[in-house]
Amino acid sequence: MKVGVLQFFGWADRGIPLESVYARAIERFQIMDDTGYDAVWLAEHHFSSFSVCPSVHMMGTMAAARTKRLRIGTAVSLAAFYNPLRLAEEVALLDVLSGGRVNWGAGRGFAVGEFAAFGIPVEESAERFRETVDIVLKAWTTARVSHEGRFFKLRDVEVLPKPLQAPHPPVWMAATSESAIDWAAGRGFSILMDPHCTQADLGEKRALYGRRLAEAGHAAEGRDIPMARLIAVSRNAERAEAVARRGAGWMVGSYIGGRGGGRDPVERYVGEVILHGTPDSVLDQILALEESASMNYLMCAPLSQESFDLMTGEILPKLI
Image 1 (cartoon, helix red, strand yellow):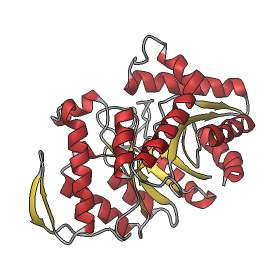
Image 2: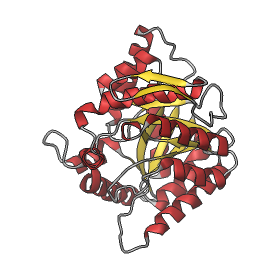
Image 3: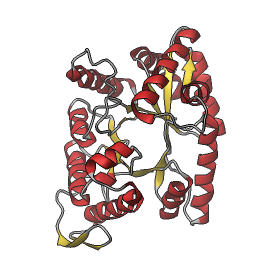
């Protein structure tokens, strides 16, 4: 199984300097590089202390500079917020500077406040996202790009640099809803699976994606399908549950909001979403997902420094 880290940049305690959030992440990049992680996947968010990394491409350049073999993933580039030519340039430049280590994950986002601040109507987001992805791939694979669409009209533009990886970096689309899974599978894209769905939903969505791929005439074999999972690990199961509950409360309060169909969203996260417990217990939960959800790539999001340390020192060597 491949294992990567979904790196959030949470600033829960505003009493500490913001720059310490980045310093801790950069230290983690180096540890990941040394201990056998496949990739760090950088989360882009805006206008919230839930995660204070507005530019995954700039952060990716720092990650590349501090590592030698670790792949640099975006989870995700929020494509609906970008001019597609600028996005193509930035990701291609990162691929060149990293020596061809980019994994490009793209998504449209769902935070209403982000769309409002950027002046992008939410109802346009899916179509804008998909058009942007099309242009980025054209920009990477053709000498000069022309495009005639709803949002962008381009004529004979040379986009430089081209990515170092040919024909382009590996590409994933974030797919949470059934419509997003249908679109990604229909186009033959591999997908990134989100950290907010339950363990049961994860298996159902993975099975749906497999069916839709087959219906569209695309092979499922040989694909890495990263599944993001929030993880709280401790030597003591009760402490791990407390870490999970604290992380869920922070997530719900600062970013997700009270969605969940009348259910307590914190209880939903603790009971059905977050993997938590002792190292042996969490390892068992991961292996169960390997079977029930065909997990071949764990994208873990540790909810504490202890969780990261135990994941790195005790769980990771048994998975890779």
